[in-house]
Length: 222
Image (spheres, rainbow, N blue to C red):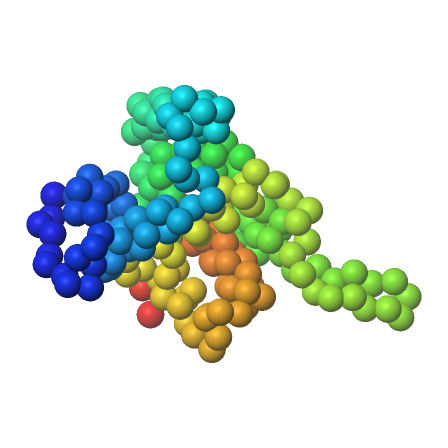
């Protein structure tokens, strides 16, 4: 556990809470400030204080138990995926991509099959429903957007992998996302378009990695 730094600004914050929660939040910039903010927010939460034996506390423990059960099942599936696919070359290539772990790799292989059958990445994008389509009727021409006619499970997996990738350090996905939203970081519409662009980039990268037979290299596009 990292030692706590002396900070007069947060002298009123419980050091015991910060020490206990230090490893829970993982790697964060200004971790002490983040934990202090969480502590302060919790002090004024509408759900506090409550009695340990209250209905609210029992319901929270019930939901928490369900969450832990789902995590245990996810870990079991992940361990099984690693065991089954550890000698699969395509699996090894996919897990070299930021954001793609055992379950995402398993899902991509199960839903897409052999990606080499897609001769061009546009074919794979269409299979995923990430190709662009425009609604037209007579002289009317609607807005161009993702068709979403393809494999929804595969599209969701690539979307989720992209979300994970942009939260990691130094990779081309995060770099593209940061450049996309640089003009207005608070613009929700721009961020939504950026997430879509990252999901499409994830699909192109998956297709390219498998077809080239080479693991992911950060910023190989440059």
